[in-house]
Amino acid sequence: MADWLLPTPSSRRDFLRTLSLGAGTTLAGASALASPLEWLAPARKLGVALVGLGNYSAGQLAPALRQTKFCQLTGVVTGSPAKAAQWQQQYSIAAKNCYDYQTFDRLIDNPAIDIVYVVLPNALHAEYVVRAAQAGKHVICEKPMATSVADARHMLAAMEKAGKKFSVGYRLHFEPHNQEMMRLGQGLAYGKINHLAADNGFKFGSGGTPWRVNKKLSGGGPLMDMGVYCLQGCIYTKGQVPISITAKFIPNPDPVLFKEVEAGVNWQLHFADGTVADCRTSYAENMQGRLRADAATGWFELAPAFGYGGLAGQTSDNSGKLNLPNINQQAAQMDDFAQCILQNKPTRVPGEMGLRDVQLLEAIYRAAETGQSVSTKDVVQLIDRTSAE
Ligand code: NDP
Image 1 (tube, rainbow, N blue to C red):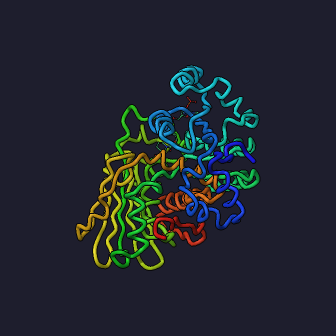
Image 2 (image 1 turned 45 degrees about the vertical axis):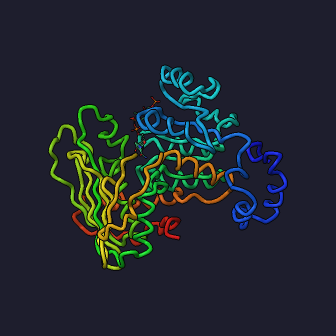
Image 3 (image 1 turned 60 degrees about the vertical axis):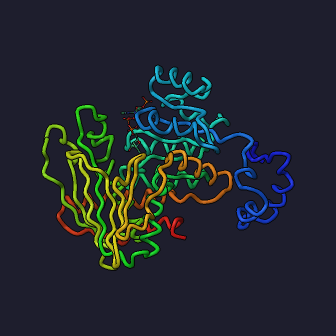
């Protein structure tokens, strides 16, 4: 048995009883016996190594890992010796747990690192997820999971072969406002949704990280970066995967800056029951980030919908259902993944969902490039229904 699963002495009897219930009943058994948090309190928190110490790792993930209950920051992978030294000091990371991109594969020999979290420019996700799989680690990969369907499939195959858990950094699936949108939409609280609208974007200033407009590293512009949230939001609110997509690029306001990637794109998701979702993303305009559903007997919306905090929602009947607390989304997301590992249960945001979204992103680009409607009937049919259950 792995050391982190060893029960505390006081819970050993419950632990053994629960184990004997069998895989399908373990969780129910656990909650009947003791608080699952107490019962499964790991002897040590799972160790996480962040790969790529850029803005998201430094600004969000590392601080969140100070708040997690089931995992903690134990390692880093960085191309910068200066960052390695600074992070060792700031987060008390052992020097033996710091790697660069050349020594990455030695993670295989490091039991202090259970989870590798890939937070690199989009086009590098595939290589490092595959190498992490080969090192026998569980993996979280940032969005978008990959810059091509071929890469996404390759990553899934490597993770499957490794037999380790794999999820995408879709933090909003663990966020109360977005979870309530899933519940209201999928549960038909306001009847059938007839129309959805989502937008998300920002004005790409001179301070923006350059790889985001370098197609080789980003795979695309704001659609790959911010548009993913609109796509996700519409799918989890409607509770369906679209059957076709139409799209149009916005006129390019700065051909020097947006030489390789689109400045923005407007697209429509067409669902089997006739519902249309109008989505918009841009690097040429600051947007609040909105997700709205108009249904048979009312509407519900989040604005802002997709940020790290300050999310707020309204419903047509002022029900207050979207007056919810803001939480540390990244801590919730990473703790959930750690619990999926500890309890051997599936994640609500698996790699297959990442593949689904990469398939849809490719379809949006194809629709915008050709001006034709693109069928999406063959994409992975996977919806997060956890909140609606
Ligand atoms: P940054 O540019 O801030 O950081 C990326 C880091 O990757 C760099 O600091 C560097 O770290 C490393 N890196 C390795 N190779 C390269 C390279 N060739 N060019 C540039 N950087 C390189 O990006 P973000 O942190 O904003 O984004 C990283 C990933 O996280 C993206 O996939 C993005 O989509 C995703 N993201 C997700 C968010 C979410 O809310 N889920 C929010 C923001 C980003 P080092 O110096 O340590 O090697």
